Each structure stands twice: as C-alpha cells, then as structure tokens.
Amino acid sequence: MKIALIMENSQAAKNAIVEKALRKVLEPMGFSVDNYGMYDADSASLTYVQNGILAAVLLNSGAADYVVTGCGTGEGAMLALNSFPGVICGHVEDALDAYTFAQINDGNAIALPFAKGFGWGGDLNLEYIFEKLFCEPSGQGYPRERAVPEQRNKKILDGVKAVTYRDLCDILPELDRELVKDAFGGEHFQELFFANCKDEKIAQVVRSLMA
Image (cartoon, rainbow, N blue to C red):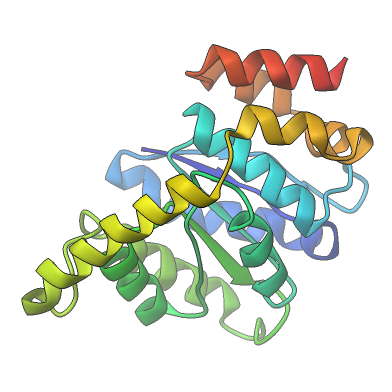
C-alpha cells in the first residue's frame, strides 16, 4: 500500500514529525510513504482546499492508495477531501477514531488536527493513530457482529456517491486554474505523481492544467 502525506500551510512546520511517525509505523508493515509536502514554511503553499484537490487526483489516479492529511483542526481538510469523487475521508483525533473509521467506514483518507490538541505527546498520538488505522484490513466491521449491516451501508454510500459526484476529469478543468495549478506545484509532485499514476486520462488532465 502506498500512503501519501499532504500538509497545508498553517501546519507545514510539523511535516517532518508526521512523516517520521508514518514511516516508523508503516514501513515495517511493508507500506511505502510518499511525502507531497508542504515540507516547510518556504515550500510551495497549499491550503486545505488544495489538499482536497491533490488528494482526489492521487486517489482517483491510483498514484496513492491512502491519503493522510489535515489542518489546524482537521475539519477543513476533511470537508475539502470529501468534496471530490472517489474519496472517503474521516476526521481522526485518536487511535479509537482511527480504528473505528477503518473498520466501520472503510475510507481511503484521514484528516488530522495538527494544531488543536497537538501538544506534549503529539508525536506518540500520531504513532498510535497510524498503528490502529492500518493494523488490520479495513472494512471488517466493529464490533464484528455488526459487520454485515456496516458493510451493506458502505456499499450504499458508494452507490450514492457514484450518482452524486461527477467524473474528476470533468471537475478539474472547471475549477480556478491557478488554484489547481498551485496544488500541483510542490517540489516533488511531478516525480512522485507521474511515476505512480495508473490513469493516463487523469495524467493528461494534470499535465494540461500544469502547462
């Protein structure tokens, strides 16, 4: 599984802390981590809205299997990611949130609060979150006796989203061009995205918007 990390401008200083926690927990599991920034306050700036654009492109193209992102409270990033097709993002504050979101909602992204409540022990909390998020295959249900109705509800949600969302390749060109272009302006975006993208149609749209 390939995990993408995306940070926004107000929390860029914590990028190295989050990446370290991700790699410490996930690399022994055989997962890989791609860091899309922001790497520091001087990097190409990303708002939480642009995090949503970037996450949608990564997940829908297959360039990433899972996105870890957030903002000050995590709320804005969650709303931005859930604005797009092919993304189910949960707001996660602790290990219990992580486990229940993975097992009940079977999503493909989380939004973390990188400022609210992020004090002493914040790095440990991140590790605990990532451990419980990925400790088992997702979507198994919790408690297990609730698995069947929870899996049924997830399929219903997927069906609703398939009707209520348009194709990402139709959405991107209609957004503000500079907003989208800047979302793809990270130092390592091109080398990471185009090496891992599995959808040539999305890749062509991204190239055209970056031109």
